[in-house]
Image 1: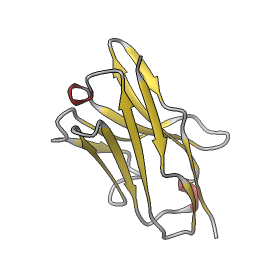
Image 2: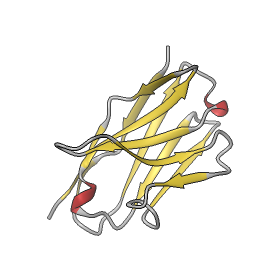
Image 3: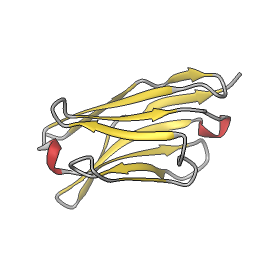
Length: 116
């Protein structure tokens, strides 16, 4: 079965950096686009970044452009989100996601808290 397991969240001060990882299994990882989403308290879940199957193309939410970088290692079945210049508004649970055969799959999420 499809499994997505995020890691790398934590508490960081404003201006700091974190690197999130998502280990995927149960499907042919190298043939699917992957995305990161986030959900802050009291807000809807939103797309942060998406990367194509080959890694050749990426897309970002306006809030992430210039600060976040999505990447993937198809040999390791892992997708990453490098987050720099973090702001308190980036505080949220971050989810890895894949859309496979007309169904969206989610990881369990990893908490990112940006606070001094």
